[in-house]
Amino acid sequence: MKAGAGRMPLFPRLERRLCGEALAEGLKGLSLWAALASIVWSIGNAAFIALSPPWWATTALGLSLLSLAPAFFFTAVNESSLTSMLRNLDEGTTIEAALSPGEGPAYGLIADRARAIDEAIPFKAVARRRLFKGMGKFWLAAMAGLAVLELMALVVLHRPAIAYRPQESATGSGLGAVDSGALRPMGTMEESKNASDESRTAARKENLPAGGSAAISQEEIQAALDSLAQTREERLEMADGGAAPASGTGGETQDRNRATQKGESAEGSSGADGEPQSGDTGSKAKGRNARGQGYEGSDTGLPPSPLVDYRARLFQALTERGGKDVTAGESIDMADLRNYQRRFFGSFAMDAPLAPHEDSYSTMLKLRWKKLGEAIK
Amino acid sequence: MKRQDEKGLMSGTVSIRNAATALGAGILLYFLVAWVEQTMGTDLVAAVFLEEACKFALLLGFAILAPKVCPRRRKPVPSLPQEVEGLIWGLAAIVVFATAENLAYYAAFPGGGIFLRLVWSEPVHLVSALAEAEAVWLLVRMGRKVAAGRPEGAAPRPQAVIAMAARAACLLAVAVAWHLAFNLAANGPIQTLEGSADEAGLAWRSAILGALFANLAAMAALGYHFAHRVIVGGFLYGPE
Image 1 (cartoon, rainbow over the protein chains, first blue to last red):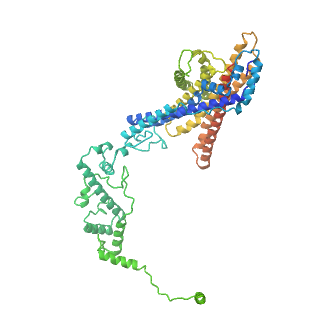
Image 2 (cartoon, rainbow over the protein chains, first blue to last red):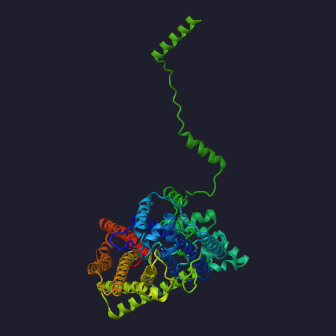
Image 3 (tube, rainbow over the protein chains, first blue to last red):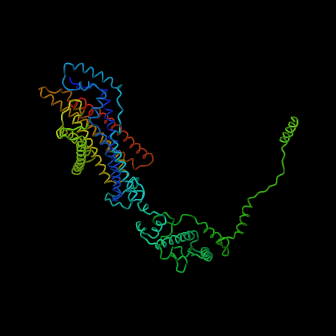
């Protein structure tokens, strides 16, 4: 009778050991998958960075690689590893002899001996297998692929990257709209291309395309910087106008006062609608980009500064309470400043003369210590 | 030492050839299923039966055709039967099928939800495929038993054959039921819970997590059973 032909297998312990070996081979297959997936991911993303495909390419590549992982686990099992493990456990090949077809006269003896070997298998030590043996070349290739990816990212994007993240506007995929979520591309290549803050600001102020910042002339850069300075002034004045009353004598007086003191444009009432008047000093902005208001870092729209302009509020309070004749100067004299400081901080000074107070108990203690000291002497 | 088959091909070459076959078979299977579903206009239940039937046919084809298409020198036991090798590469083809299905789903519904679908659907496909692969192995053994009984003129033992057929039928039923249950859950209660908030949202997450653990546990159990009974059993005792 052939071994294992019945319902119960003859070598259950050997089966369990070989099953562990098969699963270990599966883990080795997963290791191979990780190395190959790293290679494909790196090379694929390097190609994506160079060719700028639609946004879904990276996700589709990652999805394919993740989905294929079980295939490497299944197909890693091979006959040679099982045979090798069997021969490590059964060095005399007794079990193999018992499993072979055909029954000779000594089959009974061989089968008994094979069963005894099987019972001893749980206590049999075999050399620990190296899970990553023979995988070195694949991991080296994975490292090389990663190097290619980083090189491509540094050349094209001017920053390291582990994945291709295209601009959101490049969604001409034909696959439909991307929903908001973790897969939405986060960074923009435009930001990485703009090396310095000044050129970036200038490009934004002048509505230049991202790639055009390198091609503009020195005069244009200077004009953009002038525009930036002007924008700051306009922003300041916009905040003033927002804090002032929309119409009325107070607002007009304030503007007139400020115009006389600072020599700057007064847009509190006349320029509140954003239209610079001809003849105003603020008409320097005329002809420039009208989208000048806003704080830096906002891409489009440039909303007004969220910061409260306390100076404007001070002017408003002074005008409302003191009337037309009360104004705030642009500067303050140092002597006056010291005087104000002295008066202000002097109000916090407290000088309360107190009568010396003697505690009777402490006085008694002092006297006793004094007497004690004299007695010791 | 490098292993060579009958045609003198190195084991690496054989692996590449088998991988290419599995890749092509998986992609073809996906397009076949998609075409049939589109032509017949199947509903959810019919689509599950169709998919599982096609996967079973693919595994059966790999198991039966492997010894015929790529014969190699017959080795004495213990050796890995070619039917088992065919089943292993058939499983790889089903992984390719699941990958193609995920990519098609991503093309239809692009977004981050595809990774949720990946951890939901791929284990379901693998659980059903492992059950079907074991059923195919039982059918192969049954066929060998029937064939081995013929030369002697004696009929094969009916109990053993019936028991094998019954086990194979049970495994096929498990494969279909598992796939159907998860498809119906995804289409019904899970989808209902997804849009809700607070407690129901927590229930949705719990259901997803519970389903994932159930899938992984079933996959581990069936994977171990397949490795034990089919791979090691086939290696030690052969198909007969």
